[in-house]
Image (cartoon, rainbow, N blue to C red; front, top):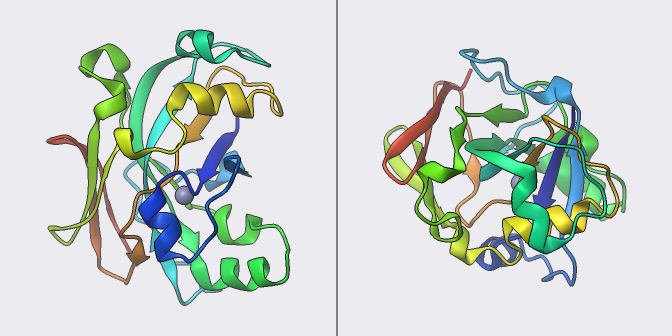
Length: 203
Ligand code: ZN
C-alpha cells in the first residue's frame, strides 16, 4: 500500500510557509515503512533538529481505480481518520532550495501517524468537518474540510490520473495553518470534532 500526501491544500498554511498558491495539488508519496506502529512513541530522528507536526484528515481507499471521475470518487472510500504528516522541516527546506525530492524529509520511519478509522456515514457533512491537534493539552492546529482548496473527491480524481489507487491506500489531504516543532516529551492528540482519533508521545 501507499500513502499519497497532498501539500498546500489550505490557503493559510501556504502563507505561513511563504509558498506560492499552486494551480494544481502538490502530491508526494510516503512509503508504508513510514507508518508509526500503533501504540508506539514517535522518536525524533537524529538527522533533524526541526521536526514539525502537520495534522491532516485521512481517507482510506477501498477499491481499485484509476482515472476516477470526480462524480464517482465517493464510491472509492468509506473510512475517514486523522493523522500526522511528520516533516523534517530543516531537511525539507534544504531539499526544496536545491529543487530535490522531499522523501528524506517526509518518508522517514514513523513519519506517518494514522489514527482510528471511522465510517464516513458517521459524519454529518464530510465537507464541513472540524479537526484539531492539541500539543500538551493546548490547541495548536484547527482545521475544517470546508477550507480545503481541493476537496476529497477532487483529490481522488486528480491523483488517480497519475497513480492507480488500490485497496488500503491512504490519502493525507493536507494540513491547515499552525504547524510547529515537536520536542521530546511532547504529547500530541488529534481530534475530529470532539472525538479523539490518536494520541502519541514524542521522544
Ligand atoms: Zn502535510
